[in-house]
Image (cartoon, rainbow, N blue to C red):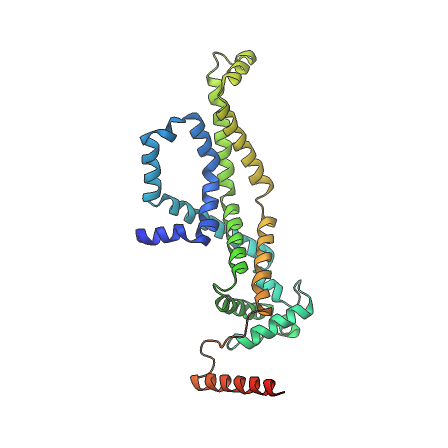
Length: 283
């Protein structure tokens, strides 16, 4: 991958939110701890050099790629536990959607996806895997139909990627935050002449406030990773994305699918449409 490709990736809104933010959040608390102990790095040439190396050598891109790889591993496990993608689950006759909404979605997909015949409830019950394959194919085509025309879908997709990748980085983030917090306590303890309680208390009182703030950030980060970043949090984002994507079936105008008919049939369709509009105007 070229340097320009890496720069474009860093500037891409989806990559920035779904890949780079999880990676950066994983190392942010320990970085704060390091800066609290060595504040001179902020103003020194060494800090500038390190920042230049990090950006110019693609380390930010590497961190984002690592977060995505770990997130994909988590995703594979979750899909097995969920029983498929949320979009597939929503389209199933046994899924959570009400029959009317599901029927509209099936009708739209059958009319706009080439070669697709949406399974009936009996078909789905007889061969669930084949039905899921049809749903997956229909969803893939729907993504192309609404690509870059549905901001809410893009937003929910990035949100799902962010949570998934954050979940993938969870073990690493908790470990580095724990090490940073314990390292801070040990460093403070080592400043005391002895390990007697009175000396340790004095060392704690003499510790600069920024160091205690950094310690608090590490502790709060650990609590946040444990309490918030979990499988249910990812499922919520997956369901929201599925809901936003499938909802475009209610507002997206039917589009002529690639390979569906010839140019002549396309002209005939436009001619019939114009004729119908003329008849409506004369009514």
